[in-house]
Structures are given as C-alpha cells and as structure tokens.
Length: 198
Image 1 (cartoon, rainbow, N blue to C red):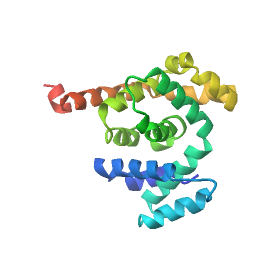
Image 2: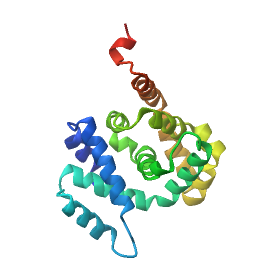
Image 3: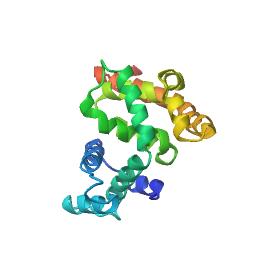
Image 4: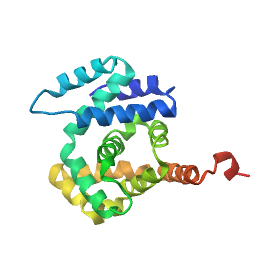
C-alpha cells in the first residue's frame, strides 16, 4: 500500500475539476486492465507513462493505490455493487459501475486514511444526485444488512472484521456523512451553504 495520508496531503490543493479528472483516470485505469495480457504493475506503469504521470507523484501514487485496492478487494466490491444496483435500479446507471466500485473501496476500506474532509472533496466533484444515492446506501448499516451485503462480506472476510471494523467505521462516520449529503442536496437544488444560513 502507498502512504495514502502523505499522498492526500499533497493532493489537498487540487480543484474540484482536478479531483473529478483523477476519478475518471482511475476508472479508465481499472476498465482497461486485462489480467490475461499484463500484470497490475505493468498496466499501471504503462497507463501513467502514456498519460505523462509519475508513479512517485501524488496523482500517480493515488491512481496506483486505487487500482491495486479495487483489484485486491474485488470480491467484496462486486458483492456490494450487485446489491446496490439491484436495490437502486431505478436511480443508478450501469455505466457508473466502475465509479461506484472506486468510491466503495475508498468508503469502506480507506476512509480513515483518506479522512472525511478529503473524501468530501472527491464526492462533491461528482453529480450530487448520484452521490446522495450512494452515500445513503453505503453508510447505512441497516441497508447493508437487509440487502445481504453484510452476509456476503462475512463469507469473504472474518465476520468479526466485517462487524467490528468495516461496519463500525462506516457507522462512526454517519454524522459527517449526513452533513455531506445535506450539502449535496443543496448543491443539487442550487442552494449555497451561505444562503442556507440566512
């Protein structure tokens, strides 16, 4: 794993547009990976080279971490995505599948290192309606239980790890996530944070 906190510290000055671009590059990096043709390391290095990114810079390191992380946690992420798309079929697009995989990885497995404030910046760079649907689902332990996500995760990971680490971390962030959801709803309707307090 890369030193994600150090990478995020360097990335903290990125604009919303730059964060959205990074997520789009992460999507492309994951979608174009073919394990029958190349290794993860070779694919990542080739992609970074083509896009004139340095693996030792913050952006390159972040992209590599997301690629490795999504592939490492693929079974758990696919289970979540299957349940999420099934439950939210009327409100989500299949074309956003990889984006949701990335955000699920960051939410479930790397949020503490990423920090809520940096996660918020990534979330705000994406369509607010898509993010409200996602956040309300992934940070709701009842939804994860009812949909079968938790049951499937306990077949992949140790049940204690699922309940005492993954779910605990998600629920402990619920207050801050609710604030982000409120901000996204305001953004969706064109209300600014300043006008909300008038």
